[in-house]
Length: 511
Image 1 (tube, helix red, strand yellow):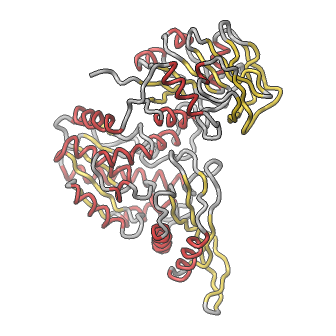
Image 2 (cartoon, rainbow, N blue to C red):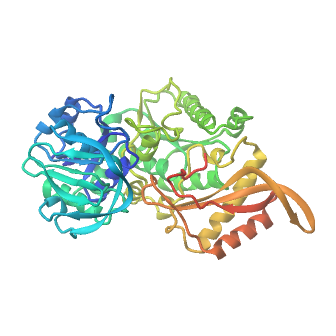
Image 3 (tube, rainbow, N blue to C red):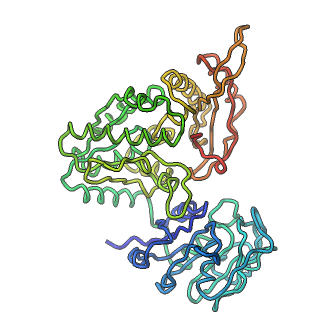
């Protein structure tokens, strides 16, 4: 079989790094992210057809700045440095950088010289997104400037002979007007790649890889009923059939009627599922706990313990499967990236896991790619487009201490909000939507009587990659109807607020 042609993204810790990989894949080219600290041997063994250096928060000439071995430039493959990546390339190849006299942040007018293949077909003048306080001062030998802005003399540089390119701006963000065209020029015209990476090819490869790894072993899958674990179940079921057993842990933190819906959906696919009713076990461990990271760790550990208990009943189990996806991994910290929050299926695992190996077949996929894979595997559209649901469930949508009463209140309110979104036909146009029960209580009046009850927050965002998100401009009549129904039908809620914060600076979930 011909080797999959691919790009390697070296992560220097910038906030947009996952978006670079996402944009490359949108161009139909497979890529992976690894830390900049990877050894030269690891980079060489990956056999990339192109390399991208990401941005990062460091200053290239400061002590302890992230560096790489210069042998990467001797591999004979094209390199694109973005922001810090451009500065690093310049610094390592004999040029110099300095603190920018004018820091640029936000949308800036870019003008290219018309001579670089990187800007082929791009209007000579356009808008780009800058975010830097350091810039190139003098070029490395063999380089030339191919784009400028009013405040940056080296907005893009190249050594076309050696296929080395650098841009000070961020082509991966949507604010850069022709960012995707610039990336396509690098991938197609400079690296010579084609748009040949599809979910169809990935599905076939992933099934074969799972079949090879598992062999004749028994497989236990951690099924939550969400999109990710359901797609993982379909993938493993196709790969190993009856060797797969799914454990569905009903931890008492699910949405309204969700447990029964999960069992029905998996039964229709022919997947073997064991339902474990562990509500009291989880609620007992969470009693009195308010801190969100502690909740996540407790739930993650308890999940694994339940799986261990069930695995012992099944006899020898060799593999545990989890629906971890790429944003989970990165948000839990990859390379030098900051830890935003830990995920129960990444950072919350206990040290001892009573299985031979953990398999994470979706670990390199973004959420929209997981949905595409689900359709490719024959999952029903209703399941594939099921609303994303965090592993810790409603535990991180009840802010503060968790009680059974609070969970019941939130379930009913959340179900009404989702019903109204569906009634308005907005399920696919809104990326994610849910309710959050806050600990805030306020005075209200209902039926001529004073109330002192909870404030409920509604959250809806538009996103494609779940790494960035804009708050959704839901129609006022939809919000009004949801608000009126919730206050009228759900006891102990007398006030509704709507979250209008994008990501960043907020995360999608509140905890």
